[in-house]
Image (cartoon, rainbow over all chains, first blue to last red):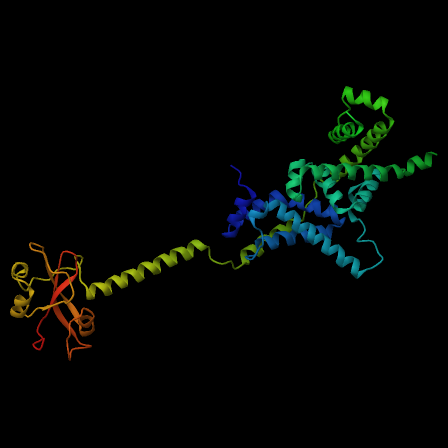
Length: 182
Length: 203
């Protein structure tokens, strides 16, 4: 039977390296993608995800199972680390957009998808979280509500509003092929 | 259903990538605002799916996993509480054992190995302590319950020192700090009733 995240964490606290490897394998890819969606930058995503796990294994880690799930804790840590990295980046190079999307060119070949990606990055964080977790990670409303620590109805309405904003942005965007045809 | 409810439904249909249900389809034909929202939602579906596919295999490089596991192996973590539990348990057991040994030296009980009786215990039961103690060199331990008629006694020999005798309430002038072999008379309750210090004439 598969151990829960919290059970794995309990083993990690006792020094079980196998439990850490299992938890990492289970949670790291989605956390990394989440960080990538938030930051648009591989280096920040990589660093934030790694740091979140590093913090988790420290003897003085602040995770408390009574306050929420381990997964929610990890997402919260990654979110905070990405925000901190972006703030730092903005402070170091004011006026420049936060590291330009190094994933866009390499991973997304389609113009509309690139436009969507750009629009996604402009959404307020709460709306972006809803789209990333519900639509891109395909998590249920209930899961996302637990991860974000808010009611299901709030997630549903955020997603509704976020999709409305994204659709409006995409309507403004005309693919160059369409423009060329005119 | 009003348009808000239809919109909720059409958003869910679009998210699933499914076409509108017949009822929703009928509403979309009659309601331009909902039809517009449906078209916008449908327009989102394809790029969202492409974005999902594009990022699906993304994850941190393998070296990050190795670094984490190495860091974990290097960490000095506090010993689990269970270890402390055992340590405390062992320490308490040792303390209790030492305390019992100490008590046993002062108040030898039923668990002490009886030394050969130096007197006949029946004499104590029948005749009373005062006469017997005087005759046999025993001194009564003061303020203790008198032995009942027929009560069994143990006489055990063990090493006592002057301080221990004083704690029992027996005055032993000049012998404080010295150790002696003594026969101690114990009642059935394990408490001492009389002491005979062996080979100490002044007693």
